[in-house]
Image (cartoon, rainbow, N blue to C red):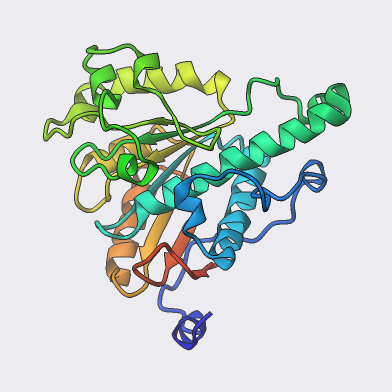
Length: 282
């Protein structure tokens, strides 16, 4: 961690910064293997990350896994106050690591003692899937990061142009499932189809361990709050050299006024692939 990051850690700019505490792993994850083995085939995006960055993301992922057990947080929204905070990159990496985590753990435990493992977890074997949804209809980028076509996608499903299964992509060298936006649009689809989207998420929930949603910036697009209401919790991304703390407070206030659960914030220090993190306590 560079000196500028260390110095920023000591400065309490926000009176009540958001929490993302580092929690101990649950016992049933302690026997799981490393997420990314030395010889494992991994998605291109993860190959480009230094080991230290992978570790930081894994640490955040463990917190999310803990929330899944304690607070039933299953649909996780990832958003920011403004554009260009790195939200889509964070969403992609967390989703890929979560998919690898689930796949490796379930595979190993199934081979050892399926009945004991799944009885202890209290989940069915098919509920190991991770889904990532790109809800940034006006400025989609996740399809580029993951190397898939933009359409058909979410807006096509909402407009009844395609059925759900035709919008879902499988990501190369990953167990992650992904729904892109479809063709970008300026229409306020999420306001028009809020009930349809809510029903869609409820329909998918029983078959998925986690659903990550890449949500538009809260201070720039009204649908950011609309989408956040459909999530069990929100992670707010902040770029340390880009985001004004006043904007962070305003975004936090918007979420709180809408009674949206804020899981925490991740402070991203540089422009490239989020190499260092600061974790603030509430």
